[in-house]
Length: 329
Image (cartoon, rainbow, N blue to C red; front, side):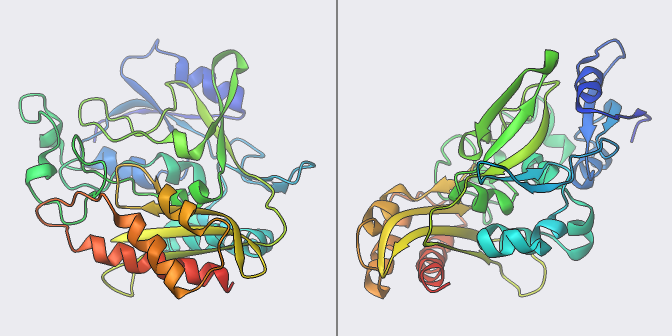
């Protein structure tokens, strides 16, 4: 690891200025919890000349209910706090479960929601500095290599999957992120549109621009009768990376589904909505047969690679079970 300059930012405005200052040679990057960033630095994937520490900015680690009823989560809020917050557990249980099942207790106590959304894929090719050299990589080596944990949808160009488990729940809740850039320019981006398929050449995995800071995650107020659930499927009961994870949000009217949102993670380069499954559930009474029909629709059109076809029946089963779990929550 090469030496680097460390700067403690005291405001979002200062952080934006420091990140946009290119007077010093080399890459300038923001650091929140630093869990993923330090790993990438140690592995030789990133070599920033300056790190801007965001943890010293007051007010970005708070959880609030806005006057509009929206839930505002500061980007520096740890996953452990999200898991343990009473309001989130009661109103947005799928997010609480997703945060509580991310990584290990030690990581959840340090890792922030902003950093979690901005982390890089856990693909072993992407995590090896050799495969970031122009003369080595043209495309995604996992497409014809070790791809048993990679994408089964939208994998024609890249098969890397996004590593965030809270992202799956946030997509199901139609959440958004707030970004602040140069001259105080602010923009709000739906989480569903925030992620990009990972690319070896650019290294980009989100739409965040150089010099921008992610300040908040915002979840909409939920209609009365909304129920939700989350499930992370792993190979072992102990800490492990997911085979897939699923979040389901149902607006219920008695036993009938008024509207549904189903998000699937770790099966495509970005969190994927099961739109056809949502259509099947909307306006219908929910039972095991209907949940099974929606689950079959969720895996229709999958294009598994040479070593990950086993993911298809697992995903179908997890979608069905999570729909039923949400309905009885």
